[in-house]
Image (cartoon, rainbow, N blue to C red; front, side, top):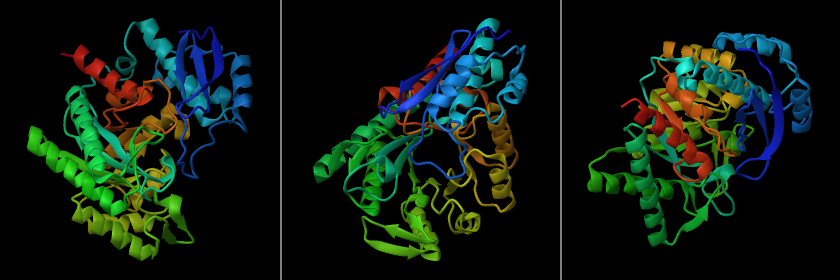
Length: 382
């Protein structure tokens, strides 16, 4: 395939903030943006979005693209001249254009034998950086159902509305946050009690088991190796934080815990893994970065990893990260960002590359489009 035309435009994401869309041969991809970001993520843009916008609109790519690996030619051409958001949107659009020319779906271009669907990990109640006002310190209280996309969507929606009913009855629901999760003024542990009730009520109603997960996003409230809980008005040492989140994981039978400690603390993650059977997941710790994943593997710090393509930009690196995770029995979680668009590229990537989970709420059009894309793929394979 010859790249005939490359264009960019600046658009608004779900938070009404600027993001970039790139079009290659009329195939488009828009990049999301994170609000709770790890300091080791690659910069979203080369100084600012307008710089990348001008660069892409002047870009001439006289390159023949025949397969996924040919993206390396693109990366050589644009190396360090654009940020991660723009590189992701550019590479995804190139792959979409190649898939269109070959008359296949994007996932088929990447892996025609794909058959494993990711489980939907859905943010149900939110706090932290994604919420406002009086809120829990933890960023996300999650539900995951062990079902394929269509059934998983339905079950996660039931959990979402069950949580709303419980919060209403407590007089503690305050609308929705950045990610369409319910906001509440309840403490961390009170919110976990609500999630526990959701799990039990859904099981009683449908005989479907739901797992509870937690995104602590601990770097957001860690300073000088102290964890400052604003809601609960307490400060924990590093060791106290390790013991506290381990206690929560065991008390509430959590299946999933993301960023329970500061993004520098590989040793703490490794210690925590020994204290609980809960999956310990790196996001700010690992930022879809191969070198940081290699360190996490050496130190046995995690057994789950968030995959956010726009943290690194390079889809070649994203694939390497996923492959290394699989080699080391680390669960992979393809994830949306808090500032989202109607683009569903990550759904094709998650299915093609056999990710174990996809993290996206089941409410809000920019989130639901990811789930609906997986449902579409599921129906096409029946």
